[in-house]
Image: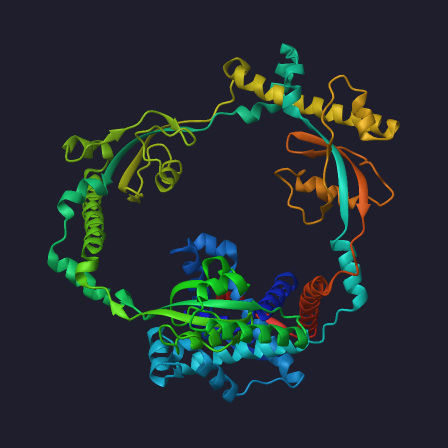
Length: 635
């Protein structure tokens, strides 16, 4: 949790730049196992990265991934995601940035770290830093102040170095002109779509040709393996009647979770936002602030309605709701200044103009909902359901364990079945893609079932419904069928395949006619069955495609066309359809766009230039550094 809080202190720009650095390391890699220190996971220019630092960083990374994925992550997936290598790369990156920052005179003092901690709302009480809260939160997260402050210092150093390097990036007016001319370019298309499905009635099935086609595609029709199971099922529902918890159990669970039922104080507020952008000039910002002060004066008049004013003047997303932000607790609002203003007001009060990165806010506090703790009676029923399910699961596990031990003592499932203590179920043969209704259609159950060999008994399998024990009684191996047994499906597939070929041929012929006639429309007019020629509106490169528009791929192909070329050289196949198109007209982008659009373009280009500059700088650091890793410690 605290690791996430540290990251929130960084701006989106810095997070984007750090991502670029990570990509650099992914593609550049590191040196081999050349370090002399066996207790270090890596050495960067003779500076060791300690194993314990790697272990702590790895734990933080895996905890974060588990939170994102809502629980456990299989070890195989963790390995596939390369988390160990990612963590090592980040540690090496941090050390390189520290060394590179020192070379150019960038350092982070302990005082800067302390000031940053004091600004973090999570460590504040009533708007002021609390040493006791700071220590308690760190202890709750099994972290010492020294470790936390070192981590934060590393984050701040990364932020300062990347910011200082990125600040050297420049974007010229000529680059903005070129970008606007490119991004604002528009084309109008004439296009025809030939669907394979429209040619299916033209396909004639000849038995000899169908047999030849089937022989080439025969592997596509190989049957799936089928298994026949004997199995025992222990469903949670069967244990529910015996699983009802008593009052004492429910109360004990409530006491163990009592802290989670604490509701912090919440406040209901409305706001009016006069938006600003990062590239706005001082004059623009001053005008916005002046307007906000005028609106504030209107809001403070006795007869004024704040909700109506918000609908009229606010430029934020809650405008249509009268600026209503609903209830929220302290720290939920991202801008600290906004959060601090709300929690300093009393119901009915209106704030001064509050400036944040989003613009100028006028805030009205509507209501305060005091901190509270949900009582036992309020959560009793939900806790009872939770306990009942857990008790049922425990009982089911107890029963399946007893059965499994019985099978082991008996020596086989067959001998155990003769004792008659538990019903043994038997399935018919079934394939993975065609599971009978009576079989548990659960991935865990099926994964185990189809991984066992004939005559093999599974271990205890946990499913979404309870537990099971499986025994594969028999396996039918996959078979290549004869044409006669699958002819209906083969004929349907053959028809679709040949219809697609016919559509492709028709597209090629129409394209040749179009080039000869000089236009797509004239070529279509010569056909007996005329496909529709669709004319689009003017489209830009970022047009989404789809509904009421040609496919996005077709739009992109249009923009790839040379300016002097009108008709595409080849049909464009998208799925089972072929498209022919011609660029009817082009309009170059307006390089002399209004100031707002030019500023937006400048910010995009500047962000790209910053990333490229930081990435190049880090790549340069790595290229002239000696980096050795001790991969044996990553296991």
